[in-house]
Image (cartoon, one colour):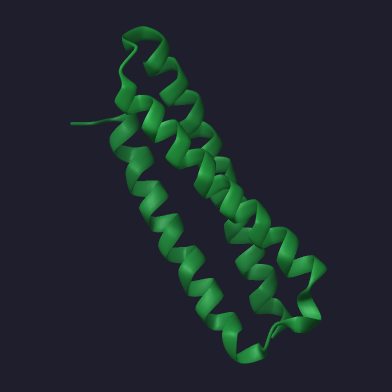
Length: 96
C-alpha cells in the first residue's frame, strides 16, 4: 500500500506544478487587465497548491499513521483534482 501513497504524492506534486503555471498565467492576466476576478483565481490556485503541499508533507511525515484502507481514496481525490486543474489550465491557455 506504500505504492498508493507514493502515487498520491506524485499526483500532488504534478498538481502543484500545474497550479504554479496557472498562478503565473493569472498574474500576467491581472497585470494587463487589473480584473479583480483574476486575483480570486490566483488565491484559489494558491490555496489548492498549499493543500497539495501539505498533503505531500503529511504523506511522508505521518505515513505510519494512515490506514491502508484510506490510501485508495486519497489517490482518487488527488486524481480528481488533477482532472479539474487540467481542465482549468486548458481553458486558460486556449479558451475557445
